[in-house]
Length: 80
Image (cartoon, rainbow, N blue to C red):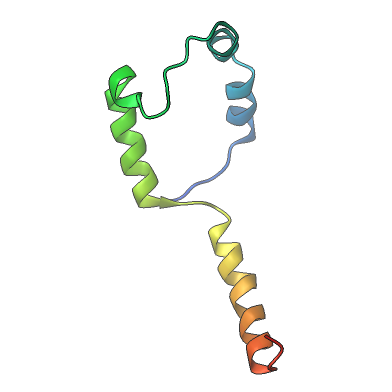
């Protein structure tokens, strides 16, 4: 299992949105309700739960890199 930052993959993103399996599930209504992943695929549900608790998005660093210094500068200049 990977720990750390998520690296976006454009190819996987496009493939997931245009797959035949997804089109069939969405058009014919074969989707399980939200939160039923433990019933439909428990192994994947467990993996996703651990992954989401141990990794962060790739844009989190940008927020801290640019957002925090700007707020501090505005605070020092009494603009906030």
